[in-house]
Length: 377
Ligand code: SF4
Image (cartoon, rainbow, N blue to C red; front, side, top):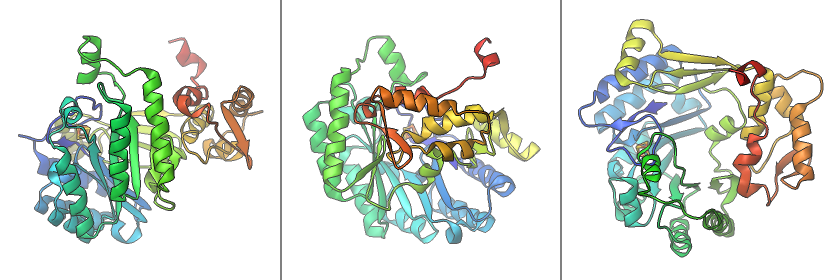
């Protein structure tokens, strides 16, 4: 579920989100509930309320949102995992307790950095202490399943400080850490600053050292790297995202949310007013759809699955994709990548090797397939 409001827009962010001041937050939440009534699966196995910053809903609206969502879907009874994304400036003990009371079981808290200069460069509205206060607030409210979201390799970052920051986070004892290498996404303030020469990327070798250090420190602390950027205590992997990486179906609700059901990808309108109008007038807000051929789904199944340490089973991938053509072109690619040392096989599954992990994006992209007619367009 996507609630697209934030206190301010972060300079690196390419999600659909807008500063909350002056926005019709209540109207949007009601439209999201309306869409849930029309499209959300009954008794979902997992729920992920993201955005945006869902924690910025005030108590009354948070209560209404979660209570009505439960009336519509019965998620509080059915879901094995219910996550809500929070930012430090809008999370206190009372709000955490309210969310827990209404069925939320897992919080993902956006620390992003433990360096004040980096937080400012990112355009974050909280300081480092606020992140720790928010984490303590969640814990003292009784929420045990906590993720800390971090971004490393920002301009000016140094390896030693990153290591110290990570050790401080590990000492807090979160069940899960997401640590992403900063990406300069198109149409962000950061990509503009990069183009204008106001920012410079860190050298690739330093980024890799930070990545390796992340793996070392998390592994030593018992948080296993079950995905390229995600580390969890055993059993605390994010089930919602595991479903996504396994290329299984999901339904996205809210402005700009994307769904993937039975091989068809569909996206909601991005603008808030357009979203609200289409929900009330048409009963849905789907503004584009893309039917994926089994061959494309096969490629995507490998592309997503190789991000996981569990890797990919060729048989399972074919079955997930509904691919019944002769041969298996993805398996051929995998065997070639095994020959050059990027993939390894174990128990009938292919996974990245230590040589392949640092270049995971490039290795996984080898599996993507574009229909021949789309190539010539
Ligand atoms: S808080 Fe999150 S969603 Fe909002 S602008 Fe920042 S990174 Fe994007």
